[in-house]
Amino acid sequence: MTDNVQNTSTVRLQIDVAKLERYLRSKQIDKFKLPIEVEQFTYGQSNPTYLLIDSDKRRYVLRKKPPGTLLSSTAHAVEREFKVLDALGKHTDVPVPKAYVLCEDKEVIGTSFYIMEFIEGRIFQDIRLLSLPREERKQCWYSVIETLAKLHSVDYKTIGLADYGKQSNFYRRQIRSLQKVLAAQALAEDENGNKVGEVFRLNDMIAWFKRNEIPDETTIVHGDFKVFHPTEPRVIGILDWELSTIGHPLSDLANLLNPFYLPTINHITGLRDVIDLPIPAVDELIHYYCLQVNRPYPIPRFEFAIVFSFFRLIVIIHGIAARVARKQASSAKALQYAKLLNPMIHATFDIIDKGDLNGQSKL
Image 1 (cartoon, one colour):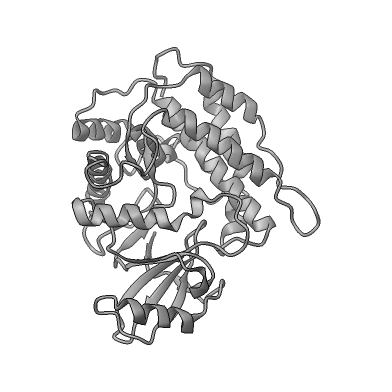
Image 2 (cartoon, helix red, strand yellow):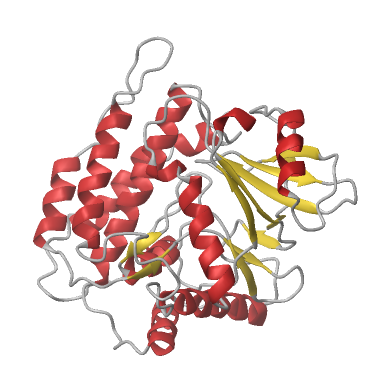
């Protein structure tokens, strides 16, 4: 199944269109003609995302912070999203939408926001790509791997992103930071005073990370949506940069490939127990990535990166549950995603409970 990226609905989180139009008039964005129509995309868990249609029917995308007091500032830092899109768009051939303008004046629509190019393409909700011929499925997956390798090969310092994140101890810092995020999210209450609560066996998970940490590396990392060409099996854009930073490239690779290590959970298709895969096997994709970035294959202790990718998803889902409780959720599917929390925790411990890695890969 595919979703065209203009999958929109009525505006759930209202913005002041008149104020927005006055601001846009002052910025004189190339080819942008007022007045505008505004719709809200159905995707976007962290930052509300809107489709702007100008009077010539050209389309643009606006991303803003959610209203109210936020539990985590990092996941909603649209200023950072704009910075990385602007740098990559101007200085590299990594496929990203053009970033037009960043507005940090909260008087315009209530929160900071930026406007970027609208990319006409496809987002595949089912990673098996069953709507495509088998050969195109392989080409799509190879294109994703090539795109990720291209991003990881960027010299982030030379394009002005040396300060985009700390340049050492990525996993150690991320685990500490995500623990703090979890602690804040756990205190979120619904209207009846019920707290979201802590993550089950969190201390066991953290102890496992400490025992099995892998050597440090640094690149730009992203790990989220890819948009494909409307008809061709190739990536034409990388979206949703809210969690991007300077970090370990294996974290990105693991984020991309973690469905291969997951069982099917509710409406989320996992491939862990599938024998006859309709797409390239995970080992084939890892090998192809290693060829693209000139890295030895197989990758030692790749389970560490996979378990961290599960942990990151747990934090994201836990955050969605917190926003649901506080009525700050921007997605119509937020409640459905929040119910994935406990199954994701159990899938994580399916790996952790096998024991320590001791320098050997078991996946």
